[in-house]
Image 1 (cartoon, rainbow, N blue to C red):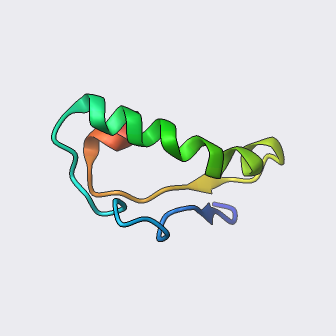
Image 2 (image 1 turned 60 degrees about the vertical axis):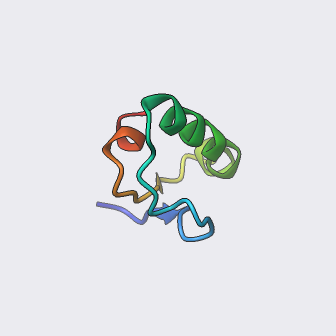
Length: 57
């Protein structure tokens, strides 16, 4: 596995378990501006979370 640029660690919500799928989807969408510069450069981006709902988004 290559190098991964992790974008988590900057938010108080990183370890949060969201109450609903809708909240998790909104949070995942909010991460896009932080990850898009890496995606355009084709750099592997990672986000670690204990919430399975966010992982599925």
